Length: 138
Ligand SMILES: [Mg+2]
Image (cartoon, rainbow, N blue to C red; front, side):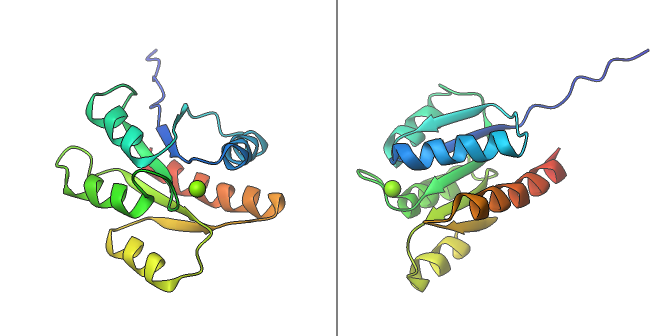
C-alpha cells in the first residue's frame, strides 16, 4: 500500500493590522483550513521572507493593499517581476473602494480580492470561497 503524502499548500498573509490578522486566523479555523499560515507585517518583510526563503514557498499569498513601507500593489509588482515568485496566486485584501486599485491589482494578475471591512460572517464566506479555489491548486 502506498501512503500518499498530502501536498501542503503554504499560505503567506501580508497584513499590518493585528485585528485583520486575527480575523483571517479565525475565519481559517471556522472553515477548517489547516494550511500552514505565515505572516509578514508589510511588503518589505514579505519580500525578504520570500527571497531569503525564511518561509516555505507559499503557493498562495493574501496581501493587504494598505501597508507601511511597501504597500500591497508595490509588493505585487515585485512578485510579478520575479521569476521564482511570479507563480504565487495572490488574493488582495483592501478597504479601498478605489476602482483604480482594484484594476491595478487585476492587471497584476490577482486571483481575487476581499473588500474590508467585512462582517465576520461575510469574511468567513469569502475565505470559504478562497478555500475552494486553493483546493483546486492541490
Ligand atoms: Mg493595512
